Image 1 (cartoon, rainbow, N blue to C red):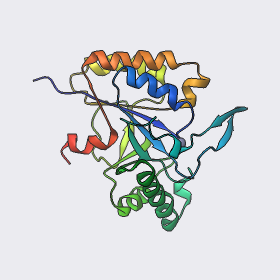
Image 2 (image 1 turned 90 degrees about the vertical axis):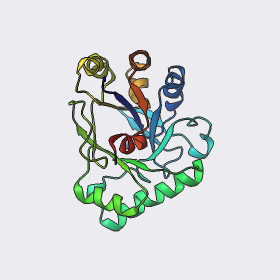
Image 3 (image 1 turned 120 degrees about the vertical axis):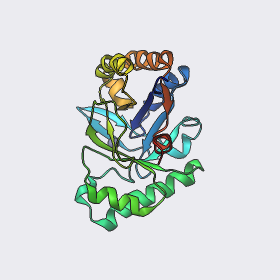
Length: 221
Ligand SMILES: [Zn+2]
């Protein structure tokens, strides 16, 4: 029997560009995991001189319908620089807020920045209710992680993902492709068409598009 292949599309930060991203995902029946910070509604920051605005989450319920809402911490700090109580607050309060706003359980977490360690992972596990954690490490091996609390990233770049995905399909041992991005990457990179191409490719391939929270069960945890 041919091994099933799985595709996770994970989008961080909850910016206004998620609207265009979700329209593309919905057209191709791709499930997205959206990693959101509940303490930064309407927040604007500047990326290379260009303003990036976050959504107001209570006004975005219908936008994220049909997709996974996951925690990305309350205010997007560097968690390795926070003590245990602070990590518990940043992640625990974000989980509670998101569950209240979206009225559904939140069971996966994605680390903000390229910044994580075992202490942070253990502290997040101790909060309870999380079954999957996405770290910021790159691993293009296409294999399931050993530990669902340590899910690595296949690619952070849509151009690269488009090149890697056919190899993922050809590789008999390949199991999992994790593509991670941000709405503003497509906006500022003028690359929504490449996302559309990737989603079309996934849709046609027969690989199963899954939520991050579904991975532990698929892996047998
Ligand atoms: Zn982020």
